[in-house]
Image 1 (cartoon, one colour):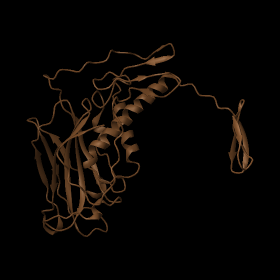
Image 2 (image 1 turned 45 degrees about the horizontal axis):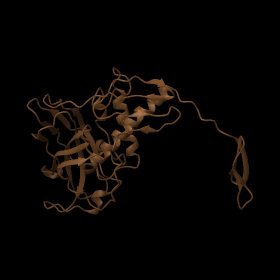
Image 3 (image 1 turned 90 degrees about the horizontal axis):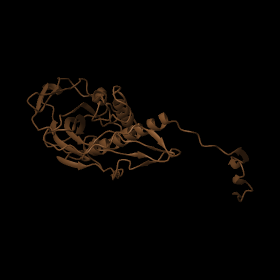
Image 4 (image 1 turned 60 degrees about the horizontal axis):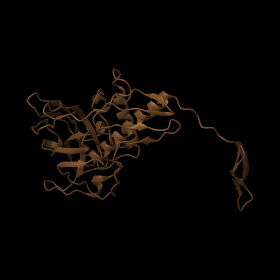
Length: 317
């Protein structure tokens, strides 16, 4: 039904045409017809949904690693996760995820704030190596100074080790450590660090590094400038999977279901232990049981200063 507004313009649907207002002109156009989505388009949409939900959970889990990010970080992280998943070309689509087949090397060097990239602020490239006896070895080569124009005080490096378990929906900060400048004349000495914290089986491990502005000498007092949006470098150094625990009882795996048409409904199952979703109604793009029982995390109001991380688990919800 169409209506006439207070300016005499007609708006709305009349038969097969639609009346619209453009500037001060009454425009009539044909009624748009919904486009048909192919099966490949729907599968691509579902795979993007997997990457988007995974990236959302990563952002929630990494909240203690980065304090300020650029506005486009959520989209960039989603694209990076999707690229890592799509790297598993040996597996069919919707049967691959960060647990199965994804190339986690793609996640390395991701920047949480492109306004102050870690690769620019830190003149060296840290190395992370997994030890055969367990734990991690982190090596940061020596360098002269951090590139931070306009800041006349000192800095700290903070590395964090995270464990993500998407089957049980939690992220755990296993360890973090602050590194101060101990070199002479402002230079930073090489850092050989060993993390002996046990790495949980069947999880994805991420190692991040942040650079924090600080002032106050030995007794650090975080300033409001420590959380400046235009300078808050943080990035992912390494990402890898840990082996499954052989004593752990495997969760039930949904039946294998290739995408098939039946009475206008497409039913499909993602072959994984922690997710089963169904695409209902082939004419819509709505997902049913999409990341069941998960809701987007509530954004917290920013406060000045860089908060000290807290070890332990964070529920991803």
